[in-house]
Length: 292
Image 1: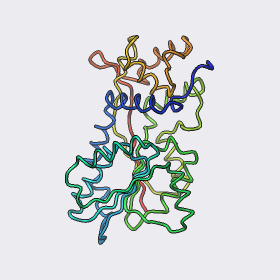
Image 2: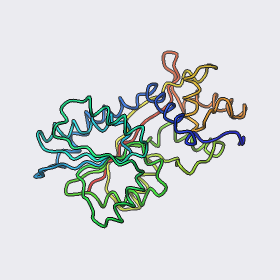
Image 3: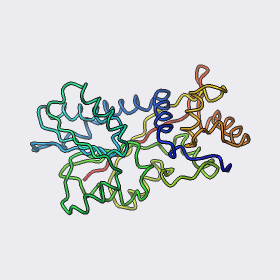
Image 4: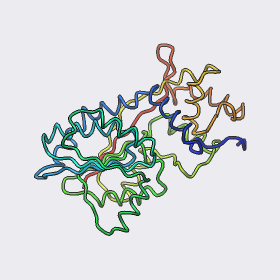
């Protein structure tokens, strides 16, 4: 590995920029929306039974777009019931955007928000020190378990916080996605970073089996349009390459042979499909639901 290659997570601004470009070129949020519309109502059908307040804990809530979709589904299921929504998010910038979104969203009168600018591990440590366990009706961890050092311990801890009829929803990339192949083949050639783990739904279900936790897993199709990656000299290509490889300024710092191999592989059927002149990377997502 060339010494000039460094992890994308070493430059937070660049990471956020590449992540936003990823969202605008992928069906990630549309895929999540489809799940929220079709599957979530059945999953949350009993979480608020006989309760005067529904407590939701968002781990890694980001800028809040998906969180507010979840809240609207809970409101539809339990009209008029108070909702206490607490958010654990390590990025102050994302929390600011979340607050802006809440300020301009209607129908949140019965929702109380609290934000904690910390990682899930910091939250876990703080709760254990307090020695008073707050129980939750719905906990969701959306695309964030890659940033946790000890995933089994994290799953065990948050499962211990579930109240009666409560559920945990985890969203991660599917074991059938292009990410799985990309990480397995190229992980050792890219900047190693202890901030981020290569983990898919296959790894998670294995961990849940080992912990003896009951779960259901749903896979939904999602794609990332990477067509720009095969034409030089455009900003979108640079940002998408950074996101795909988790490398800061990959195009400028990667060894030419590594880049050439990736360019070839990413167009192969195990990674992507070609449709109407576009190259669509397999961004399939898994939605894992764990019961109390």
